[in-house]
Figure 1 (cartoon, rainbow, N blue to C red):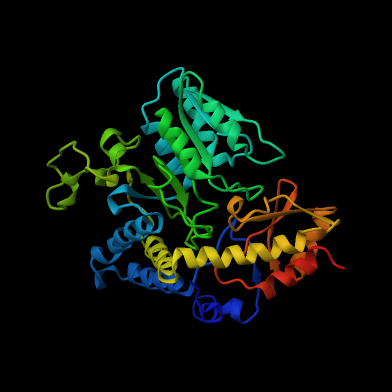
Figure 2 (cartoon, rainbow, N blue to C red):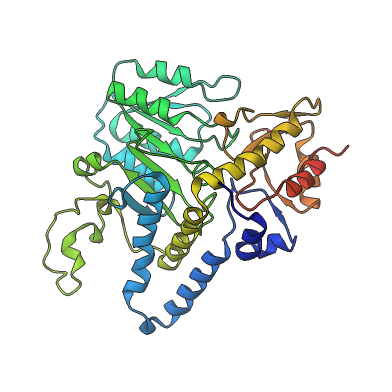
Amino acid sequence: MTYDVEALRKREFPWAARGERIFLDHAATGPLPQRARDAQAEANELRAELWRVGFEYFWDGVVRGREFAAALINASPDEIAITTNTSQGVNLAARALPFKAGDVVVSTAGEFPANIYPWMGLEKAKGVFLELVPMKHRLPDEDALIAALDRPNVRALTVSWVSFATGARLDLARLGAACRERGIWFVVDAIQGLGPAVLDVKACQIDILATGAQKWLLSPWGTGFAYVRRDLVQELDPPVVGWLSMPASADFTRFLDYDYAFYPDARKFEVFTAPMHDLKAMAASLSLFLELGPAAVAAHVASLADHVVAWCDGRPDVRLITPAARARRAGLLSIAVDDLAAASARLSAAGVSHTVREGGVRLSPHLYNTTAELDVALAALVPR
């Protein structure tokens, strides 16, 4: 289950094929593949001369975005709501799920703020308590998370699939099963794992999933989606009501026939108007993952990560913060070195895009990167 990486680079990432930059910073923001650039450029041009196409041209990006997002995570399009970022999906979970004063939401210490502040807001608004389970050796502690669920008033577990700081990957199937056994809602921030790893929301028994698409999904800023399990779609009301959340608004000739009845699917959670030209590009980017095959992409990224793990193994001058085992990581690799600033400067001088987060240099290779590029980065990280 492979694909031709060199052909992919020439077709979709020509700047990489020309050697203009070694981009290993997908955990921050991903570049757009050529097909997304073309879709965005065409949509922008037509937006400037809108009379040349009908509204259906732009709306097609929304429809295909739902379809491709659903295919990526083994969901149905009617369980997908188009959003603008991860925070919107997390806020949907925090505000739509029927929490009451005294309820407890469990998460792990070390979470990215997008999966913390919405729940802190819920504390202030409804008296719901957010409890953060301490980490173990700087990594999320799955055993402690599950143990924390066996307490009175715990109503939800919310976690990031992959840690932004360490690259540690949680076993969502295990956590989802623990939540379902206890009748607890399971909310997942998937932005650092979706793309470089394969996710099945049904197998993991996820209730609500949130993700932006601007990182590993190689899409424009301001694009993303949320998954809401079909049974929950029927039970929940949107925390923010959009005018296109209602079938009554589908007929643009009869806007004044108000009927406060939501769609029976996840469209009820969408709030438009959205960046339609960017959603066309997101749909194009998602199509790339489906064309290559999510499992093939995951296998390629895992092999790149293996290369970094092997390089770190046994070296006294570096420490791999990310778990070494394949099952415990995705594409994000965090490496501790003696002088972070100096290491970062060397990487930049070598033309390697990267970030420094929480005490480690973050290298995040993706579907078009090569081991040769990684060797350049690793040589710059700690010169011999």
